[in-house]
Length: 456
Image (cartoon, rainbow, N blue to C red; front, top):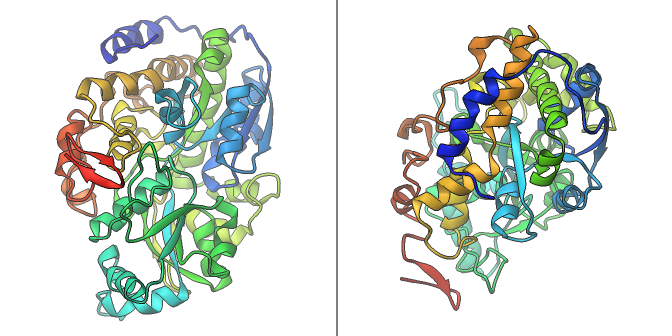
């Protein structure tokens, strides 16, 4: 049943204050969680390795998955009890885009953590269009307007310009589309009849699993990609590509992955859901506490083959507060990976709504929807009521600080100012349709794709 934002907010305070500090009586103790080999699965690894799951009476198995579709199917079928997910996956499944299932998230896993990388050849062609600093290094952030003449040259030669992203409803898909559009390039549209996402595209985006991105680019199948770490830094270490922008520089402190479970699991296992959320919150706190002092230990965990399996130095390059662009061009990036600060773990409705606006912008949602529809869909999937109940239990147990949680939030962040977004267009989740209509490239109110053309 759909819950409106008002209903959820009304129950949040009651749930939080009624929480008990005693060990929860679990409905299910043995759990299997899935993940993809990316550094932002770190809360799962930390909760497991540091015993936070066991502290809650949970016996957890973590299993790497081949790709995002296999992972989602595993959660829907019950083979997995939950998983590290693309934030768009629970939303898309719940509205019936692709595989239909009611998936919820009580926990957001991180902020930022992605980048866009191009091959050495493409970078050489872009560089003349990139402003330089006084020391001769490229000035960041780099706009896709520097790529536009390169793409035009390919078009003039009749050659497609191919780039990769990890999944049709991934942050990476929406981020690379956002970056391209902000630089004046058409990233393509979806329609119910054509789900390629390449309708009227200047740049042809296709799906490649994250660990395969560097090799696919090195083979020349794609000329660049949007992906999470460590697969951008891997391109630098291998000498095959150059990251041109991080998502932090595209949209400061943007939402990234979530932890997803089925609504049925949460309903049948409410205490187990609280327990796993408690463990994940503790892991996120550990990852960020004392100004990231635990990150080297986290990198050691993640470098193991059962987790990410990349070299320590590659993962550390972004995880410990720095990011390398061209070889030797290492720049401070203290917030490239954020796991707890800035309320990173709270599942904000406004984050969910941003993903839905991008689905609408590019035609995955084919028709104009009311603002109320966006609010209700966000509240159906993102569950701050569960999150705050788990947080209250941690505070009562003396394992978290009262001041670290947004108890009085209405589920919406303050509007993101123009200065924090690469195209200088502010975002306010309270006005989704006005936001969509403010974006120069993309579908507007009343528009749809018919016979591969925008109508309306």
